Length: 336
Image 1 (cartoon, rainbow, N blue to C red):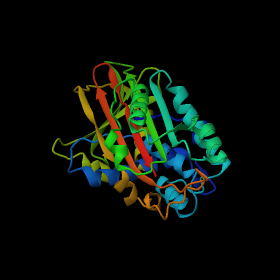
Image 2 (tube, rainbow, N blue to C red):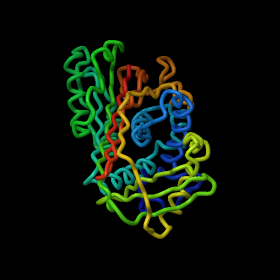
Image 3 (cartoon, rainbow, N blue to C red):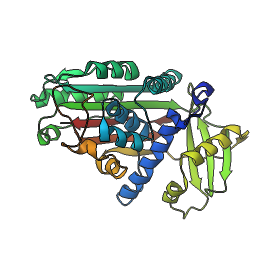
Image 4 (cartoon, one colour):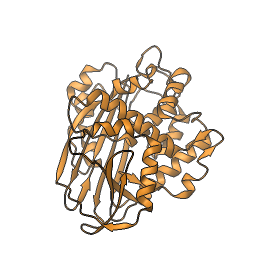
């Protein structure tokens, strides 16, 4: 899916040698996609995940990181020199626009659960409040049943009841001395603006693929379908050809192509919400110290304990039918 970003956000594409947050998100999305596909293409022909959520969740860790961990996260997220007020403001404006322009069809929520004995850094609390409008919830992780019920209940509520059981008792039992859990969810339910009729179509010679942009009602978000010209072509080859710049050019072509009567047949389909661990993919992208108890530098998050990331679980699915599509997803992070 894509979204038309206002010119004021895209203005000054390069400020000095710095790229915009929007560009960083796109570049990160393709880095993750390529690594994710290389690791999981043999597992299933269908893959579904939300790079936007992964990006935002890692930013929550980036703003509390230092040293080698900060450097690795910035490289992975394509966010050079991110930890400064101007960059924070840029991310806040983009996030507010995404939520405001799609408030009728999108629900986005993040909850940070922290050990009640953890002393959070005041500066970190202020940052997550201003940037993500959240306040960490103190919990007692020794009461496993209560924690599991609370996290699953709130995850279910954030995804309109479509995603359940994101965390189980054994998940907490396997992790010793859990100090912090980040649960991140987005629920998107879009209805087609035109169930029948005119859509924007473009044939891309480089990709050897037909592309079509399908609009949603009450939203700037579009579903972009890329269909290889030959039915024998594996879609995975598109991953090798696509990157953030190529996709931006493709979106531009679609946006400026005239609407035309398009014969478009989309079967009803649903990709199930399988849990996927992203730890190895993230480490392959260069962010390794954050998972190392001795190397992780997250002192900007808490003052009285040393944190490191132990697990990242992602769960997403998409449903497309004659009315539209819905895409709930959830992510759970464990920090010891």
